[in-house]
Length: 254
Ligand code: IPE
Ligand code: IPE
Ligand code: MG
Image (cartoon, rainbow, N blue to C red; front, side, top):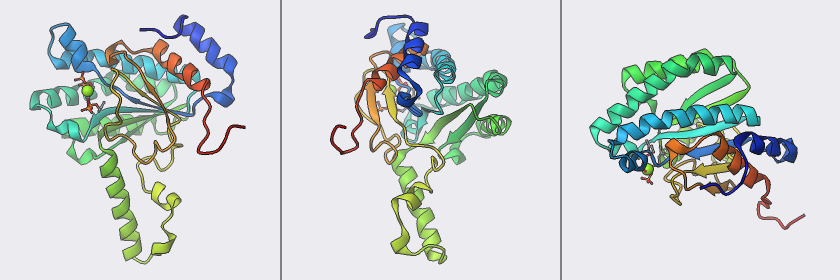
């Protein structure tokens, strides 16, 4: 379902005309709908996840073209550990495959990959693939790609609270000095601007425990498209929609 007429390149041109001032610095995406996409084709769920890899590739390409600073992709939630074993295994091996296939191109395109979440739970093979892509891209600065894996927003907040408590207990921080800035500095995303735009695919209208702190003033864009069918064009459509909004942050219009 296309809400905005025009090809991907036409939409990209319009984003550029609109001007850099209106460009979101940080776009976050809840990549949803792989299972339904597979079911529509009478295929098992991992087939949908595999097809979703192409969408990841396209969206990273589009983010570089549009000139975003940060792209955050929610790839696997803490709650997703409760899925059937076979599906989890398929997702972990797809992660390894994605990294093996894309690492050279990500490095060449200037993408710095960061992987955020409770990585202790990853299999050794997945963890070493993660270390590889993070290490091989760490000096890039064209686009920062955050992959959220084994991530939960509440768990991230609890972790930040534990880090603060540790600093208070050790005498490095006074309780009255706990501020929003000190809290934010202990999140996985400490060195990223908050997302300006959140895209959720597959029509679901919920946050599903993603970036709870960081999304206080994020603009939401719900796309009906299932993740494997999402691509550059759909990304550009969401960015154009964002560029025509007025963000007020609690204030009145200018
Ligand atoms: C998103 O697709 C991918 C992950 C959560 C890992 P889903 O697997 O949630 O697909 P649906 O929502 O069942 O269609
Ligand atoms: C959110 O999708 C998590 C990811 C996209 C990784 P889910 O499919 O797990 O979310 P719910 O269960 O529909 O809320
Ligand atoms: Mg889902």
